Length: 184
Image (cartoon, rainbow, N blue to C red):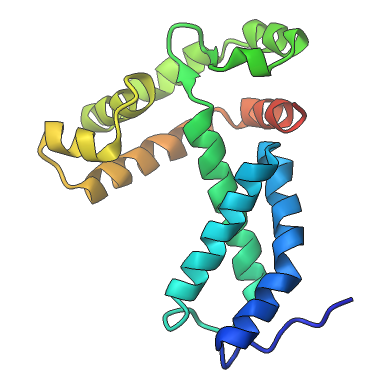
């Protein structure tokens, strides 16, 4: 078992050692989420690039391994979010060709869309509209910000609020959906 590199100095040599130590396990970790080797490698590469770019800002007294796994986890979930969007009219995930028929039946049997609509209807109208523009109309945050005369950061904040509300109100369905996504 390899020893975690001493990265307190965080020079080029220690960074390379860190990369060699964690690249394969992190790629395998990302692969469990997205089931695509090339994309998993891209995610891990991006995490290492970010780590190098922010090497002077990151608190190296904390676990670098934890930082790497958390970063890969977050980027993998973002990848899933960006590539598996909800179809408003169907109430199920798009890209159904990736899902097996049993999963489609399970999702059809669950009244997910009603719960989504109910949750969205309880949101601030601006937050709801931003969510719809992003998820149902496929607009980028920058496009939404321009159309609504908001900053991109405000759009991100409103999207976070909408997604948090959906997570809270759909938590019993999220386990099933995540299980289905990960087992494909």
